[in-house]
Image (tube, rainbow, N blue to C red; front, side, top):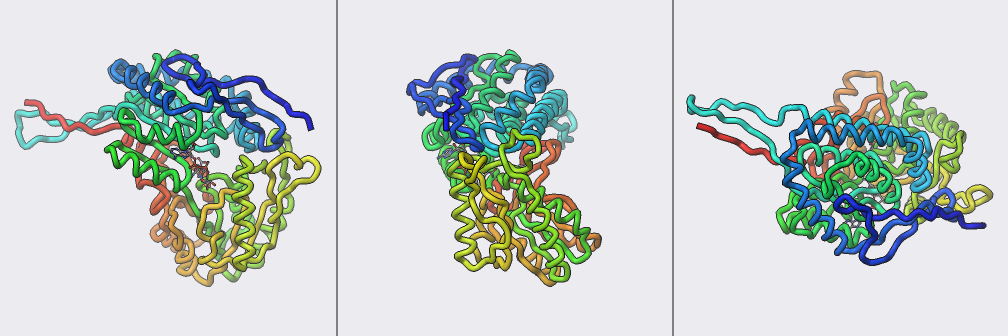
Length: 487
Ligand SMILES: NC(=O)C1=CN([C@@H]2O[C@H](COP(=O)(O)OP(=O)(O)OC[C@H]3O[C@@H](n4cnc5c(N)ncnc54)[C@H](O)[C@@H]3O)[C@@H](O)[C@H]2O)C=CC1
Ligand SMILES: O=C(O)CCC(=O)C(=O)O
């Protein structure tokens, strides 16, 4: 098989200039649908590059934070307009780089445009309150100030939306930014950063350094001039971010894993429940932190639900996300494929019953990609690894419950608490679920994934650092409150 190479090498973006890493090293980004295709190359940077970018961000801070909110907003509107003109180009790059289907990739890029516009508008909104003082001759009020240099560490599963929902609020509230994107999505990120460059943001306001998390990411965690860190990714890395930030008193925010349940009760609309379970569990090849991974079904409709689910899963078209009819693409990388396969083996070893899928696809058009069949287990018990750990792949675990109480006990019996949904027509059951489900995002008669940019997003338990991102919640992380007393 011949190797297709896109010769374009993406550079780091530092102080308003595109420059190579001081290491002189580069790293390939390959298409997970066809590993012979090199999508681009990115800089394999070092701690020195990171340090240089933080210096640039620090220097740019004074002038950037002195601009008015509406002035900063104008820059973000410009970025949004440029990005909007490139939905196809960036969507295609995303599909080729990490495998999600083109409609999903383009939709996500459009979401990034909307996020930019939302936060651009925030520049016009109030950032404080007048509070009555006990002294009737005094004026007391709150205002908000930026944190300084914000370090952004992002994963590969949402290459546009996640970086933008961190960068846009950071910038609008007057911070400057250094981003270290996941290497698996770094070519896409550099195309997005090009939109900031073309919008003419002052040099140093936004900087991008690509490279290994263990070097560049760790250097960002440890850097004394990075005032705050915002992270999305695995729990393992999240803990390192938190510990490092705590050690030096930096502010931090983490969004991490999920083990999200769907509860299907006897009175549910079964067709809707099946459709939404598949959307929530298998879209993006199950690589969302809000993806459905456990399906807890009430015993009265268990067999009926299972049969409908299996019937529908059989019809899923798998393949290269750039092909029109394809519904599910490959895993994002060989590493991720191996992780998913190891969980599938573990599921069988621990006694769950494999009732659909379970294999890597390697014949014909799948030969050079990281494809895995949509997989369903039943007879899954809560003590099994596949019922407890985040798999991040197209693997569903069916569990049976007699009552809503039992279903909720199972649903809550994990260390995570990101998202959850229930299918029922009974309002009392809906309200019980809304009250008792330990998750930051609870959804009724809708899939477990589905984040809206204007609403707070974040998890309970070990899914997050208990903070929220997006919507009005973003100001809480990206600013510091000052209480002012004037007499
Ligand atoms: N909650 C979510 O949205 C995501 C969860 N994951 C979970 O994590 C698993 C592993 O995926 P990875 O890509 O390896 O996640 P990861 O947590 O290693 O990577 C996320 C980001 O952190 C960076 N990073 C890695 N090590 C670092 C360190 N020591 N210091 C600072 N930054 C560091 C990476 O380069 C990347 O930019 C997945 O199988 C999935 O379960 C992965 C991506 C997103
Ligand atoms: O934005 C979304 O649709 C989901 C976000 C998510 O699942 C993730 O961060 O992995």
